[in-house]
Length: 343
Image (cartoon, rainbow, N blue to C red; front, top):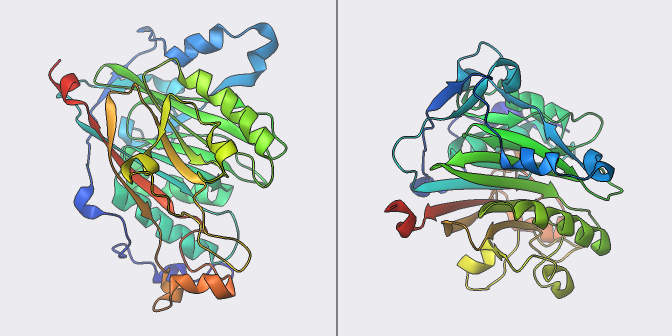
């Protein structure tokens, strides 16, 4: 029963994705051939690194399929550079961040549910943590992924990593972290409304490694400082009530969950016999951004089909994960500042 019963997961499975809030951006693609050079800001950042730090930051392969009219997954750089075809001003963008849990417990069934949740969200950017190779391959086979998304194509073998899906033509980069667990920062740079946007994700060091997490954050924020419209999301492995660690978040960024909930905390990991409920999962947005958070909701607090009719809160006594992951995800919507719309 390690894989559960994936056949129970129907295409129209009812989840807790807030379908009444969805944005459904349709991104038109321009194809710009290599002789028409365009420099991303993160390319400039990479070029300006001193020699002794040159290995700490690199380009990550971008792959796409039908979104650029290809018959298979291809490296975007091998074909052409592609960009968003500027039309009407984009007024809303949406995000999902989700630690999808690498454990084998009901894995195939959980993964099928997670894929349906990602599809239902129709988000502009999807940031995933604890992605194993098997899930990466399942993702590549999904028609909705092939039709709509550019993906980061980091090699994930023998462990787990992070992954970003973007509806917007983009380039991916990786910044190395000091780590004992193979952690790093994955960044996606794109252009929306003719302005650079950077979306990034990380799975910060786990367990009692606060000093390492601090170092990892100290690497992340200076990179994100090169644009106004910057976002950092993922599994931070600390709660906002851990004051010393929460203080490591740059004063230039908002913790969107707290901002939209008037400072009232909740959880993205449930209480168990061993642990209190807490929220390691965050979406941080730069305060200078033209995009302002309008909505955020936890997702994934429901039973997968094999546990239909059971109570998700029974984990508090029996420690059994009945949900799509041991984490909740976060779904968030940002609206373009009205003053920007008029420009």
